[in-house]
Length: 234
Image 1 (cartoon, rainbow, N blue to C red):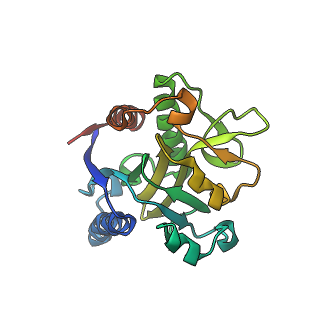
Image 2 (cartoon, rainbow, N blue to C red):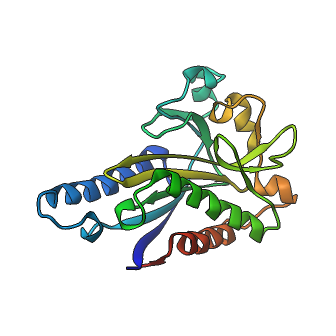
């Protein structure tokens, strides 16, 4: 059965507001699944709803459950001075940055209706980014042992262009990816991105030498998500 995904472009939105929205949508799905727990109805037949949220945040650092506080290289007081928010959150992964000129995507997918396999889910999401980069003439790649998508992966200084981290509850996902489009990369100087020493960050703007139309990138991401996961939009 072909799934349907509700797409929402949230535009500029505070990080905490987007986090609360994700938690609400995830909770609606998990509570629905719990209500069917003893009915004998297969999980794939429970009428949950898939969502894909695209957001752009003001400056914020987020630290995942497995992250180290020392990977934030400035104090929280300095963050405040620089108008950077800081949150310890419930996704996997270490520390990353969100900010203007970056597309942050939050799929709230019920994997019971796709494939209940987080490895499969993450590799598919990476493939979405790799195929979007191809549309811009860039060769994105995975790196063994690391989540996300990289450019110049075979060089002495591989550069991450898209970070990823998820939370999953009863096979319903939240959090997602942070794709650097026109991102001010100087904000990565204050962290150890994803906890990885000796690796940097890049953006579409830096690689192509020009400002990129954010709406164009969103349309390409939407297309490749639907193609890779095999769904249609509501």
